Amino acid sequence: DGGGGFWPIFVRMNRCIVEYKYFDPFIVLLIIFNTVILALHHYGQSQSFEEGIELANYVLTLLFAFEMVAKLVALGVATYMGDPWNNFDGFIVIISLVELGFDGSSAISALRSFRMLRVLRLARSWRSLNELLMSIAATVRAIWPFSIILFLFMFMFSVCGMQLFGGRFEGEEGTECPPGREPPCAPRSNYDTFLWSFVTTFQIITGENWPDVMRNAIF
Image (cartoon, rainbow, N blue to C red; front, top):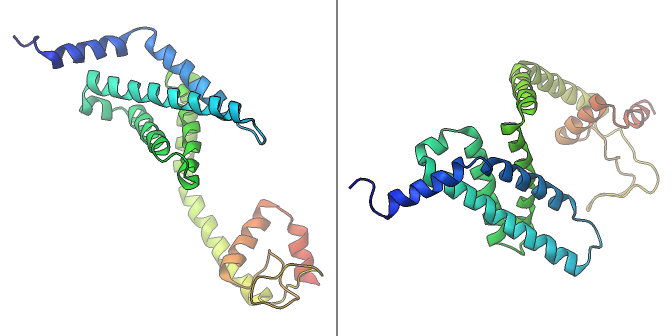
């Protein structure tokens, strides 16, 4: 009998769960709750509050992992992987599980920020948000040629800056010098090396504190 056995029954059970009309709204509520929980972290939080947040993170991660496994079983690997949103969600779940598995490591704990990306899944059920994200993606693809031209201009002006102002910027009195250098030292925005020349050029393009760069270049 093709319908007998544990696995077919298990697949049908997971399919019923995934196709249940309240399953997707429940996941949306979990995503919103997950976002709120991540935003509750603050400096000076009490030990009990931190333990409560961590417990909520564990529970939410397990629930999202259950969703991923249920969809994998119900839809099959090929169908599951054929949906970009499922791939995106699976990536976030795996990152979350890795972060929980190495709990206590500061480097691995930085992966927690990836959980915030889960809020983008709201676009799956929020049509206007989905259309907005698709428009942004199309715009990013369209500006690639402009980005290359911008990079080339920044490269040229960075090299020109090194030729014109390399070694000429002097920091104000009290400027902290890096190890091995004697004062007066160049300010952080300078044209002494290509790296800092490129960073300074980018700073000027963004309009961030450009008068100081201009003053150092003139005087």
